[in-house]
Length: 336
Ligand code: 13P
Image (cartoon, rainbow, N blue to C red; front, side, top):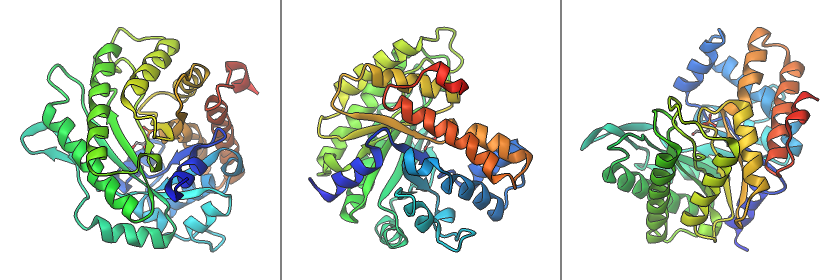
């Protein structure tokens, strides 16, 4: 077993999942302002530190994805943030892309940037304690999109990123996110997500990536947010499993879904059914941002000093997701 495979399995095994706390300062500012908290470095740290020192870090969370600002911050207990996370047996990770910009040649689509100088940044992040990384490619669905150009160029960037990350002895999370925005059908999402993931693996293989040392972070197969043809959770699970079984090479150890704008409950229920019917060899777990943090953030915003109360809400959500990652969640357990 390679060292990279060991890291990936440590992050994903036994129902553990990933806390995606890597919102850029711009996104975090939007999140904080939506609950009327001002977005200062201190407030961003306080909220995140509250989550990072909660009980569920030990039982539910295998890895935390950090943002550049956070990995350099020091906690109240005088530990660096990676030290605080590691003290619960959790592996620190880091977002390394620098965001999605307009894709020249297809002005309505985006290409993720951040390859220039990446090798040097990765060496620094490794020294700061990171052992895995994240890069997100983003794709829109419409009758014309995602275009061949966007599918090709984002896959190429994900593969070049992954090669640099593995060279630096870290596990790359490969995140091709086909967005929920739009009124497309689930079938359309299935077909386009399948194309996107196939192309990603074509490029990963071309770049000699050790597939046993990556984590795939895809979207689930859903109808668009404004579609009037929503499908049931059972159907989501069935289509998601079919898509991944057909497109992901069996060497990949695990898949950690993004929540992508689903409610906390949808993201939990869908993951639970995916695991109940998992007919693949992949670990299927979560790498949620909003679907792990939303209720905790709302509660915290009412009294940012109520650490214990906020942690209680977060612990519950993380426990529910970890049950779902084992196919053991039920709606009754939500009420307890
Ligand atoms: P959401 O779960 O809120 O979609 O965030 C996950 C993530 O890391 C997006 O890049």
